[in-house]
Length: 155
Image 1 (cartoon, rainbow, N blue to C red):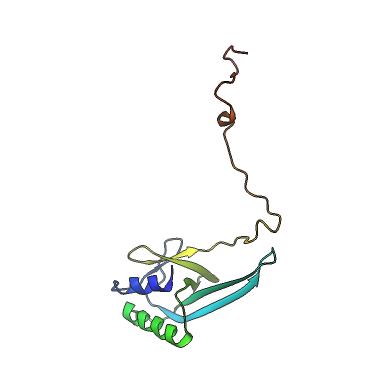
Image 2: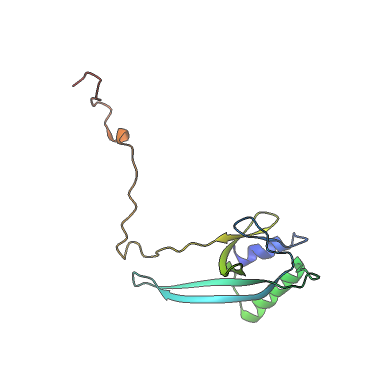
């Protein structure tokens, strides 16, 4: 989910909810303690230099049960960070601490923001010796139409 999509969704919400991949909700008294831009430059295992730009949200639970982050306040924080940090419309990554700090993708179901599990991947499969995944076919699909089949009496 891109930053522009988050801003658009916030304009239509009365409350903000974040749902973890296991279905639990982040407690409603969470705070967004950081919005930042992360520019990552790295080299993959095939030797290609790559660049990745993301917008980072950090969610934090406080023992402050009397305050709730409202959509218009989060929109203000986003706009302030866009102007101050020169943030572009990039994909969102959310940091949230459960048992350890997790990094999640972000989606929206029309009501809640969904924290999605992120996966690692090899970006240079064709360059580093990872064999291409073999296509699975049925043997019956390989036989031409005019061949004998066992038990048919044609052989």
